[in-house]
Length: 473
Image 1 (cartoon, helix red, strand yellow):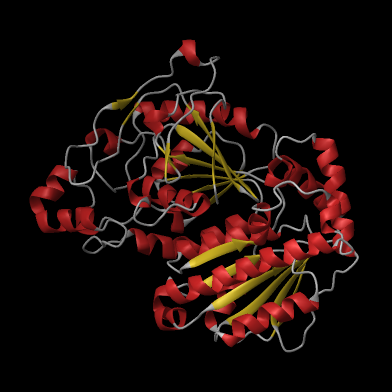
Image 2: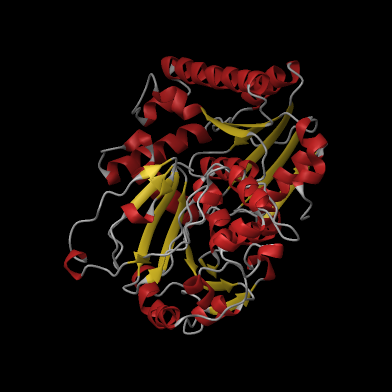
């Protein structure tokens, strides 16, 4: 199932699919919707989520459970108006912004509501795919209720226990009218108890198949992902790209320090550790005691004829290529090597495994981490190859229904900077400094974000997790 989307451009371009989320509250619908959008956009498919709750909050920002009682005519009217506004905007987006996959994120809990949505979409010639999340696992439902009461815009500033009580009452109001998806003439996938059972009906095209396959690999259990580049390598010190160099003395020091560094974040969680097959990542992870797995797909971007050269040498030997790559770094393919787009394609199975798994730590390379980070933080393709992913730093990402939380843990070990600005051959150079011991216990720096990119030089260097940034998923 690792078919390249780019090999099916015609099928994607001709597709217009409305994905209609279905399910009671606290079943992970918004999380699934956001993951579908992230995945498709990462693979160059124009996708967007339309959250009916966001439309409803424009008129009713913090409703009580009574608002969602079907015997409340004013609440019913406002909720219907929000759904109509969302569907209208989605259809307009398909028509005027070349949309391919629009996700209607709401409970859509009755057959009558789903039939109305389907009629509106079919009238415009758009396919409809229902994605229902069903769950009767009380532990999972409770964990989702806890998540909602602390992150949902409906409960900002409210007492957590009162919020949880009100949310449970909201669920009971929806349960009174809820009808599961079983319409025989509809296309749907039904995910039961976090994918322990999957029911599929009437799938008709390639893009629907891809979306369904992706959702089959999802789970909504809370978890985190830890990312780290390898320690500073001998090639890093020399300003060379690619290769299979060993760690420098400071890189070895980072490998020694890594177990204590990750302990601040991971604690006693059961974590699976992934590395590439290259020496510098294996050496970096050698003191970590987690279950380890090497992935060829995590190897660094192949620089082709430029492997082992410095940027100055590349600019001198291949000036036209050097300029062309900076013009479009995401799509440019090194002679005999790869582009960032190629890397995304080979990372698709990795992303599937990351979505399927629970707590995972990945020790790999700069270009690979840029692609993985861009996936989880929903970074635009043209920006992802220019992100700064510093050496000797662990990045913790925690996906949530309303965003992805990020924390950074920086080791007290200097390293060269491997970041190169656009249209410059000035070699990376410079060092990322040591932690200022006087700052370790001081309040966290605010940090800076530009389109979801946190720049390491604008984040306070600390060992403990003081800095947290949340970016909409």
